[in-house]
Image (cartoon, rainbow, N blue to C red; front, side, top):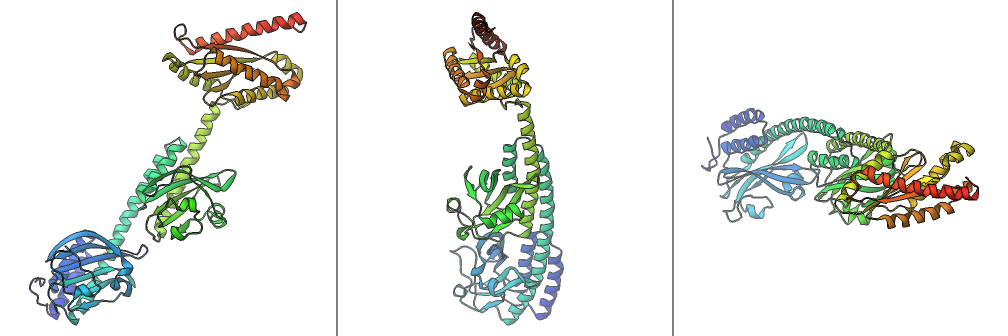
Length: 506
């Protein structure tokens, strides 16, 4: 029997049977949507309930949401949010009976604002083991529809519904954790497949946004020389932070994050003394959590997630962020190691300049651009009589000379150009958007600096230089321009050797 349309109350015996059946049916329903609809049906079996709502409450976020309501006996799923602390039922955890004047009774009615207002209601909290999960309310468009017996019955039904909702939430939480574990595992595999540190950082931010219900995520990387000084490397979300934003951690945050490797939870960003003004201006209040990124036994950064609304992040959310941070740390460490190894494979270990392999890659790119019309010249440097100095003063002195020449070349080199150790005592500088004259001006600056260099002057070092410009009409490859510069350099060396012989220094 359904009493929502008859206006008659079921008998005590019928209600007892309703409660037994409700306990059985609701207990067997785990789907949240199906359960919410079933709770309404069980209510309407024993009480007039042309109006009805079921709300769930998140105490940590002070957020209540109407997830199901009925109007004139027609039920529908919903998502209507309001502050839990504004509800007397949720704050007092006591049931309420309103015989008439519902609109003035501080109880909520739902539905179309233009529809007929409900006038009487019974409302009960959904209590489970002392915790309020939400509230349900049966409402009528007529006054004096409900009495104290109705209220007692409704409280019992709310207790049964609360047990079923709790079981449904527990089942949903287990399913969520299972899916989350699968996602974290998949994210870990994806992260470790990336070998570019920048790609890893971007994927970290994306992964946290996918797994956690947050409004903003950021990866802060620490300055190796001052780990209290952090900088945003990547951020996304509604409250994304500017890349490069800096934060000098307070002593308390430094101790917890950097020294003790602990997570940090800031309940109210708007009033948090730990957040500097220049960072707070990019936020809208709310809350945030941060966990350390630990690489090689030390904290190299902080992974943060934030919410626009003030909330209490749960232990599970913090644990998930820590698991993601752990995956991210491994992936970032691998990517950095790969990047360092790649850099080493392209770097001359003695001078720190690009090596011949790196020079070849750069020259291939520059020659391709030169074929399209962009000027490009090179200068080849050779240390005069280097073998003599190496044999006379030893290999350590020879290494000093090579490093000193490398430093001079690097100092005089423009950022857009590349200077490399070509091999032995030869260096090559690639000058983009320059012709032979531009190359010779660069060479003159280098010679002047070599003459003034204390280390090189001590050994009386001089250099021979050859310059060439790539000519697309007569040259077809990198080797062509290198050969032209070599020929120019050996011609200069021959002239210098002739001068030494004339002076008796050969």
